[in-house]
Image (cartoon, rainbow, N blue to C red):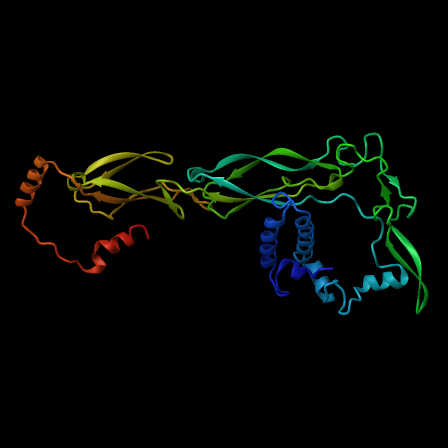
Length: 364
């Protein structure tokens, strides 16, 4: 049996968060919805079992006390339960095991627009998953029939055998090969689900995307994952958010950023303008003499805070556009304007106060 730490690729001193992170990474690669190969399915089962053991403090402590890849004592002796089971027929599984198991969790990517995260949005997603069979209602049996007690083990799920050893004849127990330890046999499997109690189907899942989420945030929808075998409870679905980039606006935590082109004349004389924001029109005032790289802040027009109250701000970076082509009349007017002002030759400004430092510090 593979060592659980090696299966997840973590050290024996790994924290619970490190174990969870390693499991999610592997599950994303090996889940049957993503990788349908039989090898990936078997590896996914190993990864899931390893995570179930190492994420539970009690199970992990019992496993660590063994110290071997078999989960027992060094040398492959197994744990105390295995020893007593081997020599005295006790300490192992008591009674038949249940066919009913919890369904697998799923991790899916969810793309949302930048405008969606300002106030939040409700999304309906269609997924292909396992659902409880409607014909047999998860019983695994053809309607009108029920599981039959195994006539090999008598319903106990295990077989006792006498084994000759150095101590003489001792009794051992092992899972029944006829019923595979369930204690019952499905004599008439459901013709729709082939005795699995679940089928593949397309269903719609509704997820509430709260305001303020950002790329990388994961949202949990309990009970929306795969239905378990034999009517077992459904797993959960985790949606990992990915916010699409916008052509005009970008995001800095709870603030929105954009750049506004201003003509040279408007920068000199000042003006007011209205442009379309992500949540409606935005009106701003451009004061006379505004410079390139100046920032105009519009309060409470950013993203709603994820864990708090209120919204961030909209920060508008100004870009003064100098015309590259002028008509003859325009050139004359500009020349008259320049003649009326004191002539100043271009000169270098200190770097700390120059345009490059202003551009660099426009938003950050």
